[in-house]
Image 1 (spheres, rainbow, N blue to C red):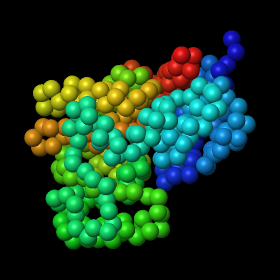
Image 2 (image 1 turned 90 degrees about the vertical axis):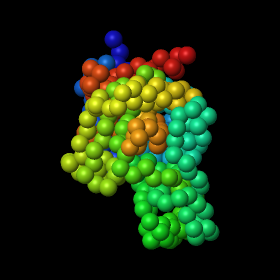
Image 3 (image 1 turned 135 degrees about the horizontal axis):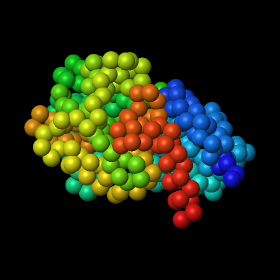
Image 4 (image 1 turned 30 degrees about the vertical axis):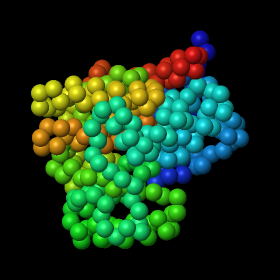
Length: 308
């Protein structure tokens, strides 16, 4: 039987390029070990439609993290090219990359999320009661996140962000009510079905870029002990939100559980990491799917939906 040619894309032009390089290599190696597939890994930047069309592959597995690779632009090119591809379509990808848009979608379907607003550098005062989190609207992996516990921290963070926005005019930020001391939880979904929650316990102040990808002291607990009903609630809410946003194949929905036992939706990631520290493969393994089996399943989902 002829092998299925798979094009794995990694790299990208965004701040999470290094993570993408690790993730894409992991996916390519796993698929290459499967006799069903003929795999080519291509490291790209801000690839064009013409460049993409010259790369061989019946199915494309994009493993680019950041606004270009998972926020809609690459998905537009994949749709234009007409090949099967893993992950959400352009509209759902754009919505999930937009943290404010995701919050609005969350509120529409009754999934609680912390109050937030778009940051305006012209306003010196904090628009929400402190403490708050100041974060980019269209970045992932906790890139650029600042926690402001008091007025001094707000003043310093605001000045830093204003300077960043001057040098990067297209970058937008948001201010969100901080839920300090909460338990960090995530729910992965595979083809719309929620996997077991994972609790993340970083040694750093919060689950930042280093804790996610570089440090070895972050602890992960799959299917942790939670207050009665919380595990079922966040699984249901993750599935409800993903369905409402039109997400397909895979995603990860992050929550913070506050001291009262209320889970607050943080954000949705449509192309989760595929590294040794990554959470979707961890949850899939708990459900009996190895890393290689997870990658194979995603290829099959792409082929299934392309024929539809």
